[in-house]
Length: 438
Ligand SMILES: NC(=O)c1ccc[n+]([C@@H]2O[C@H](COP(=O)([O-])OP(=O)(O)OC[C@H]3O[C@@H](n4cnc5c(N)ncnc54)[C@H](O)[C@@H]3O)[C@@H](O)[C@H]2O)c1
Image (tube, rainbow, N blue to C red; front, side, top):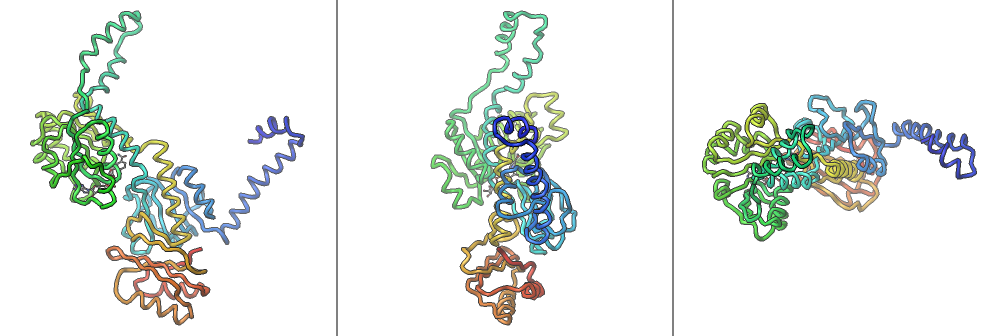
């Protein structure tokens, strides 16, 4: 940077290069240092764990947060992370929220967070396009052996061949890799959420006949689905006639090894694509299914020792090292979504895409706002209202949302909320967190 100013700017502008360097020195060292000192008093601090895309962090800075990249968690109000594991860490009381730039949250102790009123966010759908593109690629790889075809090029002995001989060898090779197209073939998509619905839509555009199965389809997703998708009533029914199957469901106890020998033995040389999680498919049944030609090929993002071994001996498994969401665009989308959700919560009490607390939001109608969370039990809200009444705080608007055993609340008031009032709210049994929003 200094080199650039010394040698470029100073050569075209009539300024002394030492002067420019002093300005830069003050900006980068003094201004940023000052912000660090002021952060203790005026800025809410967000701890950044992992490499989070700059466009995401810019959102937090623009919203007035100080990014704590080096020191620990003490004094921080929020955390933004990717895969850094904090499940075993004791979080300081100052933490109100954790934003995970990505889908899974098993690196966070969500149960403990829920008990302590810490809102955990994730970014559903932010990486859906990246995964969808990889699945479309896998559909084509399903019955065209492009992987082996590509590898066979390495074996051509170019050092001892002229161009004509190379072309002759390639022409001979071609015959080994004749595949078949996906157009007019039957695809079953299991799980029609953010990723599955996009896969279904684009597979239809590529000319496939798509059947979908999703017992928990939301109205929002149902409306997004193309009208030509055939919906099945059961998983087994959805797989009848499936030439290609793509799985887009979460791994939870109910879906563990949901693709098992009972289903696999009803297939007929089908291609199975799994970009969800390895545990959804029973590995033993899968390998048997490949041996007995119930399955033609397995394309997955989740390597295991047995699968890697199979790739080394047979051509019916294609594995990627968990690349589904690995695109620059997806990392940026996840970071921007995680950071803006965190900023909105810390500044306004708004919750969207939390894995533990209900969605809540409301336009601020008066000067002061309290956010508090509580265990969803009768009597707690009235105790909060009593404390506010005793403190002469008039409630202008009150929004309460609950989900399972947790509730989120926003209270707007024109009256000043002194810190001791928040302390009193925190002392009510069942209130798990209470703070002012700005
Ligand atoms: N390979 C990767 O890098 C990568 C990246 C992102 C997500 N994923 C995986 O993809 C999965 C799907 O992601 P998403 O963003 O589409 O999730 P999503 O929550 O938007 O959709 C999941 C859908 O599955 C449905 N579902 C749940 N159980 C089902 C069952 N038994 N049968 C049929 N449908 C069922 C739900 O109703 C929901 O509509 C994630 O859970 C994650 O494991 C992988």
